[in-house]
Length: 129
Image (cartoon, rainbow, N blue to C red):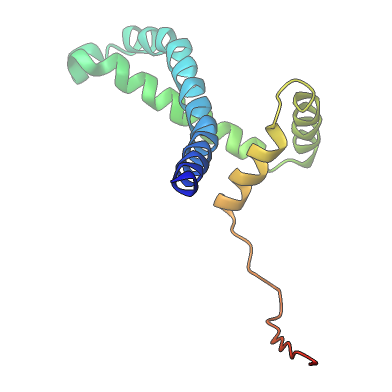
């Protein structure tokens, strides 16, 4: 019974550790959405998209702005000087976020799984009695 509870505890903790970065990403996207909502509303009013897209025009414009923002920053990652700035910011975050390095390593492993380069070895143990 104790083994079962330890197994359940281990699985629950692994699930929590897996979900924390996911929740952080969701919260970040929600913040970006709320920030860009005003710009989306302005864009709809400026271009007169209300009559074309209907009541969901602000949401559509905000989604397009969010996608463009992600595309723009994805494009900026190609520049090495900006990568140095990002690495510096990341290293400064390590001081304030406990476990950040572990979360980053787990995320990178999920994005780019490494090929196992270990060589299999056969070991035969013989008792010398």
